[in-house]
Image (cartoon, rainbow, N blue to C red; front, side, top):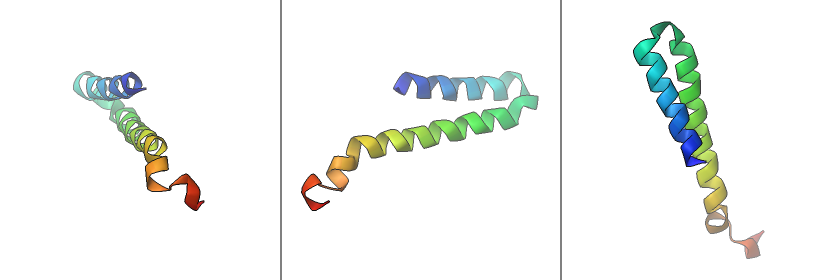
Length: 55
């Protein structure tokens, strides 16, 4: 999953560097990468944030 995040960020950087007209797409990919990172963090830490006994 982290490789997917790396690829999204790399493609975003590539688009900004070599195809400036695709900047909107690059921004969307970057936002998707950030949201996916936050989702992964939440899924991995959900048991630490909300203990199972308190649900």
